[in-house]
Length: 77
Image 1 (spheres, rainbow, N blue to C red):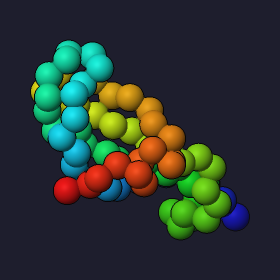
Image 2: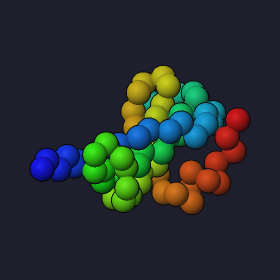
Image 3: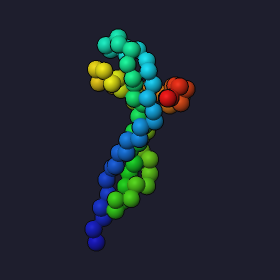
């Protein structure tokens, strides 16, 4: 009997916010994404392992990890 298991990461876009990027200093759109990694068995995601929230600048492409509270408090438009 074969047992197929592994990790699967899903990326979900939460919204876009216009802010100043700390890396390049430009006022540009910042894309807020949620990345959740789950343990899967037979290609069915079962147990959440890790959830990260990331803010990415649309001008320079720099990514910054943010907290869950910060991601929820941003005025998403």
